Length: 109
Image (cartoon, rainbow, N blue to C red; front, top):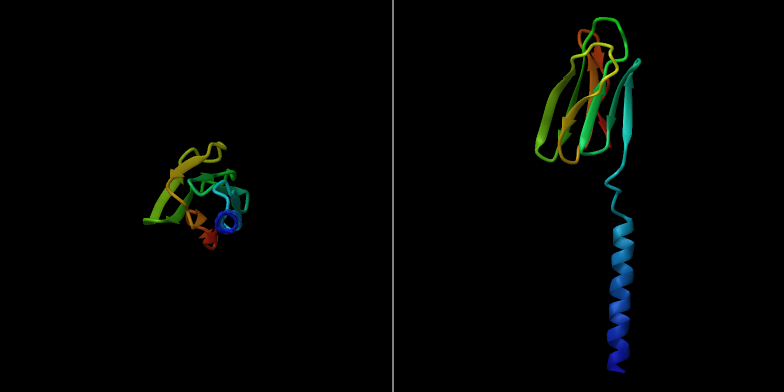
């Protein structure tokens, strides 16, 4: 009887652990944000900013991670289409701005 009880406890522990792990968000979660044609993406560990408008206004991004505020990071190539990366750890919110125009609201991930 004790062996059956021990096996039942182990089985219940494994089942509860599996359920708990399913509730944890995936680390690869990917989100994006737009300011007109300007673009930002976030996969929790990299925040990418790209200026897609040839209007002379630089694009930059701000983000918050576990250690607090990160940024700004500017896309310096104008409308060249290259992405500027802001590396960090587990970004919780981010936004992109067009210098001299406006910013998007902070978006949570």
